[in-house]
Amino acid sequence: MRRSTTRRLAMAATLGLAGVTLAACGGGEGSGGDDVDEALSSVDVACEPYQEYGDLEGTSVSVYTSIVSPEDQSHIDAFIPFEDCTGVTVEYEGSRQFETQLPVRLESGNAPDMAYIPQPGLVERLVTDFPDSVFPVGEQAEANVDEYYNESWKGYGTVDGTYYAAPLGANAKSFVWYSPGAFEENGYQIPETWDDLMALSEQIASDHPDAKPWCAGIESGNATGWPATDWLEDMMLRTAGPEAYDQWVEHEIPFNDDQVVEALDQAGQVLKDEKMVNGGLGGVESIATVPFGEAGLPILDGSCFLHRQASFYQANWPEGTNVAEDGDVFAFYLPGDDPDEQPLLGGGEFTLMFADRPEVQALQAYLASPEWSNAKAKVSAPGWVSANSGLDPANLKSPIDQLAYELLTDEATEFRFDGSDLMPAAVGTGSFWTGMTNWITGEDTQSVLDSIENSWD
Image (cartoon, rainbow, N blue to C red; front, top):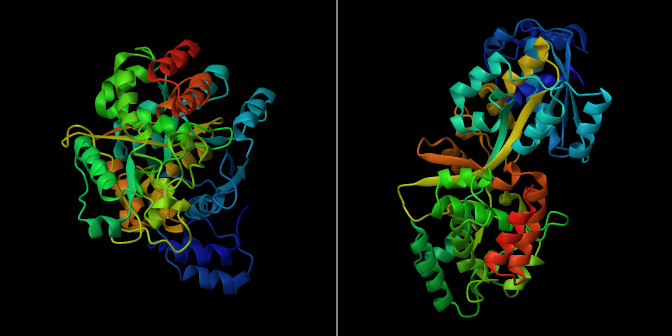
């Protein structure tokens, strides 16, 4: 896994690092003799931030994740400064069977040194099921989280009062995609409240009888229904508020509480109204069969004007689509009832250690540092963002990523993690997904919420 000095030289130039010469940083093994060493020594690499990790030459750390090719390459490339300045070798392994295989490996005593965990709920299950295999976050990593992250991120990695999982990447889900050109042509303004958004929807329906204000799709193979769960979660944050949202996710109030009924009915103002959806795709019931990745595309031909989906949806626009504030498509923050409040639904990954050797703790600290976030941003395609406040947003590749970062790090933002990722799996990725699909295809609000409540163990 260690790269040749030629590869490292190219990546150092890409990352634009500056400071102490690479050859002086402990990453001096090479494959090209004196000529390569001389060329390498001419490239400045900032190793000062890595000195706190000490000399780790000759050690290695295995990392197991669900992120596979081609998305894995930017993760692998972002290890390079850490490897070259500390002497550690990072052995990256991505697997499409990650969530089923990780517990098997822990059970058999074949644990990786570290894993990237995509949901806090999985962190809790692993800590509960394998208490002797999981280690708390190291001191250096915890110090980075305390300094550079909103405090809510630390809470999502904590189980029974012990801090186990440090944040890695992030995403923002509370967005509405639209066409800036269509808005300008029709004189539409970005809404600041939910009432403004619904008034805009009514205006679009009146102005464009051959189109629909909204388009939506929740088909996603075995995960069909998850985009609709995001709708309910966003509405809960806006109608009931973050505190009630937390109680709902923790089942301190029932899934079918009156506040949840109100939130789902508010989502229904869009998703259950034939006048509002499904532009260019069919009627309300078509939402259940339209692939989520294709659902927003009618914005491009004017069949619909609005599509609620996360920042990562930018990867689904056809090649050549200009995603920008004055481009073919862009997104605005999904408003609530009060323009002075800014709840934000999102997600992300966490690092969890199954070994507490110094080099493993050092890698976890690096992954929670501004150095990693900036290196990762520089080698990533559009669609990746971090909630680390030490990230320079200029390094992010798209305006949507920069907008997501602005919201994720804004002190006024009340960030909440995707609720289905926090709930027990039987509910969050089970009855919740199927229940929301049933709701779209005709089942009433109360019946759906009652059914999900009854499924909660």
